[in-house]
Length: 125
Image 1 (cartoon, rainbow, N blue to C red):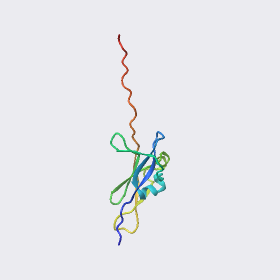
Image 2: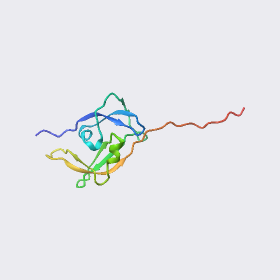
Image 3: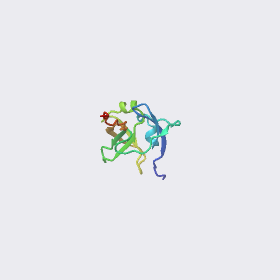
Image 4: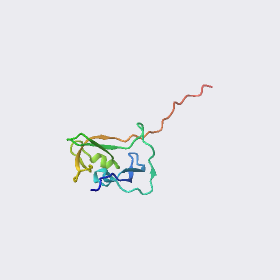
């Protein structure tokens, strides 16, 4: 029996400020309509994520085992359409013939650092 393995791909990510990036993500989640994923078309890479700069995500949980799955939400429209408690996603689990249904438990908004304007000190001549 073949093992279920995660496949990755590159998807176009539309930021809240209108900038488009190319980000890697789970191919199964990216193909789902709820993620808003579409193939990259030459956008620049997003770069490294940190606690101060990260993409918007949807966190799903299996109500039986309490395992979680986190996926990138590629468009603001897809993020707005997700509803906590009622949106679901079928996660392929190893040693299972059918996907396990996970329910949305949290939405994490994107965080993009803006420019910081320093203090303007008047010249006291």
